[in-house]
Length: 103
Image 1 (cartoon, rainbow, N blue to C red):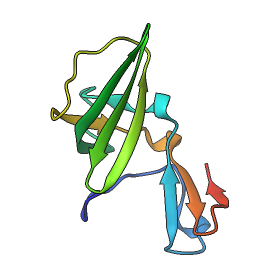
Image 2 (image 1 turned 135 degrees about the vertical axis):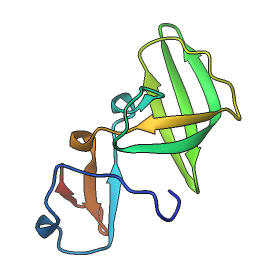
Image 3 (image 1 turned 90 degrees about the vertical axis):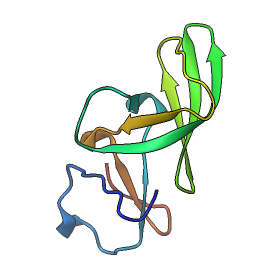
Image 4 (image 1 turned 120 degrees about the vertical axis):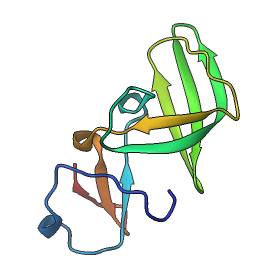
């Protein structure tokens, strides 16, 4: 993600033991251009992989790549800008040793 991008979680800061952590989100929990205002980050579509009634997309956000599983066919094209919505309750936090600390 880019410097200055923020995401909110449902977890209190005092539950974290370190400022060094990673976050993860299940691909099916991320939505695109959903009209939400909270927990939205901007990205650019890199790949669109139709798979029957589902579509797998890769979206680049800064230096990070997000995999997204859409439960439908979509009409996005590589290079297109999109808004990703990541629900606060779907964010998993891991410490630097990849141990789950919240989620």
